[in-house]
Length: 505
Image (tube, rainbow, N blue to C red):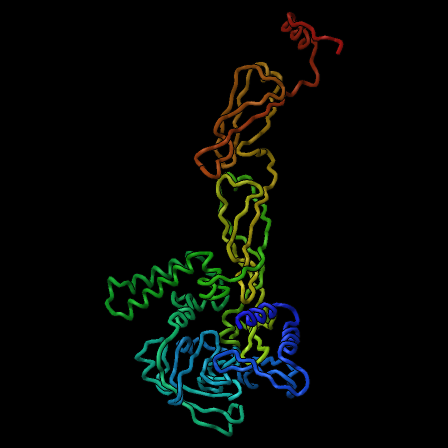
C-alpha cells in the first residue's frame, strides 16, 4: 500500500498527472463495465472506481469566493483576530488564520481554500465575514469593546454574534443565528507580525504618504520614544511591553536589509526564507576626487513596489495610483480523487496592488574604491508578491580626470619643463585631489620623459585608508623652437667637449 501511495505522489508531479493516474487505477482495479470497486486510503476515506456516473471526471474543487459586494481583506483594526481560536455555537472550535484562511471541523472546510474570512468596516459597521465553503456566508460582529491587542482578558470579555446567510447574501433576508466565544491564541506570532512597525515608532503617517524616511529619522523617533517609555522610568507591565515592541521595530527598521524585506513582505519576509527576485544593476559615474576622499551621496531609481497600505484599506487615497501586481506562482493543492490530494505550482492572479515608485539609495563611496567596484543595496530591486526583491547593485564608473591617471593604487601625472630647467633643476607645486599641495623639486639634470616617484602621494588603499600608493611624475622637456646666434655660440662653448653621436644607424 505504501508503494502505491508513493507511485501516486511521484506521478502527481508529471504533466497531465490526473489522467495518467486514472488510467493506472482503472487498469489496476477494473474500470470497465458496471463494476464498482473501492480503494481504502485509511482514516475512513475511500476512493471509488468503476463505471458509476461521473467516474471519468476529475474532481477539482474551486477556491471559495466571497459573494459580490464582500471584499476579501482584513483591516488592521481586526489584526487581533489573527491566530485565534473560538468556540462556535457551543458546538466546536474554529480557527482564524493570519493568511485569511478559516478552519472548522466540517466537511465543507476539509479542502484548502474552501473556507476564508475577512474583516473590515462594511456599510458603516465593523463586520467579520466568513465564507464557510458550501455552508455559505456568515456575518459576525463584536459584542463588547473592540479589542486592540490580544490581551486574553479583553478577548474573554467579548463575543462574536451574527448569523449565517441562508441565501448567501449580505444583507440577508434568511438568517440563522450564530455566535462564538474566545478560547485561546494558537499562533502568538500572528498578531505581532501584523503590527505596523512604522506606527510603533510614530512614523506611519509619513510612511503612508509615501515619503522617504531616512535612517536618521528612524533613529531619532526611537530615541525619543525610548526616553519616554524606558523600563527604568516605568514599572507598568503594559508600558514595558510597549517598549519591547518599539525596540523590536527599531531593530528591523534600522537594518537596511531587514527594512527592505519588511517593506516588501512584512514580518514574514523578515523571518522566513522566500524566493528572491532578479537583481538590478545600475551604473553610476564618479569622480576621481570622490574615490580619493570618499563621499556620501543619494542616488535613486524607479521600481515597482507593493502598495502595502492597500492590503488593509483599498480605498485609501494613496491607492488611487496603484494597479494590479503581476501574477504570483503559488503552491496549490488539488484533489484528484476522494482523499487524494497533490501539490503543484500554479500561476494565480495577485490580490496585491503595485505602483511605480522612486527608491532612494544612500550611497557611501569608501576611500580607495576603484572603477568597477560594486555597492550592493539588499532587496531594493522591484517588488513582487510572494518573493523577496532582488538586490540593487550600483557599479562605479570613474570619469576620466584632466590631470591624474590612476593605475591600481598609484597616480600618474605629467608636467612640462624648459630646457633650462632640465639642465639646472626645477620646482613644482602639485595641487592634489583633495586640495592639499605636493611640493616637488630637483637640482639634477632631467632627461626627457624621465619619471619621478613621490612616495605616499597616490590613492588610499581601500582595505586600509591609512596606507597610500605612490605618485609618479612624468617630465616632458620643451625644446626651444629657435636660437639666436649668441645662444648658438654659447651652446657650442658649453658643449665643446661633448662627443658627437654616430651619424650612421
